[in-house]
Length: 252
Image 1: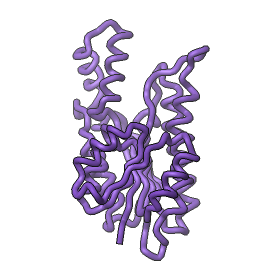
Image 2 (image 1 turned 180 degrees about the horizontal axis):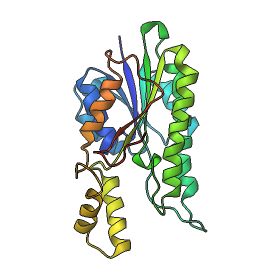
Image 3 (image 1 turned 30 degrees about the vertical axis):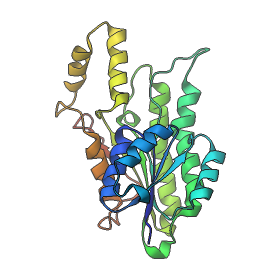
Image 4 (image 1 turned 60 degrees about the horizontal axis):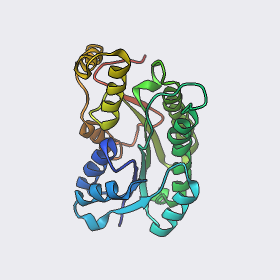
């Protein structure tokens, strides 16, 4: 029996690490993203590659998601909503607010709603929705109002769904990573360096000085936590935002 897990943003970074980890634990994957080449590269690293399928779509496009799922007809054990857009936004003609909100928050909403009809029957056990939020759901950063708002909004969405789908045996949780060694993190640090006139190395060290463990997480660490949440050992965690940030913040 197939146990499909849909992973968005699977072409790089955390999404690719999640895909590799879940494939190594015998899940069949639906890899979702806009860049076919990047998804093909991820798929080529998964064994056996033939068990995994691609869905080329922008998560903001409900029609494209619907059409892709109709072609694939997965039997979903879980959805990992990882895709997201980072960067600054500033009010004015070139404000990136709407693009970030539409991708991170509305895109996640559309993706999950379109996926729900393909979930395995509840008689087969618990199923899972896991949303990758951010440490910036917990705190504010100047110039990142859209990103902070969208990631905080994902926590509200997660809690609502946890309450709504509990009777269907769907567990819904979110992860709030801090700094993770990804291209998005590198781009963020480069932006900080450019604005401050400092070197990348100086900015990196300044940021790590604010982290208790003084380091970034590896994408594989996020993936392993996702793997635990979808494992048969885990039937009791739902409606929770789990922080994995090397001690950068400690929510009450």
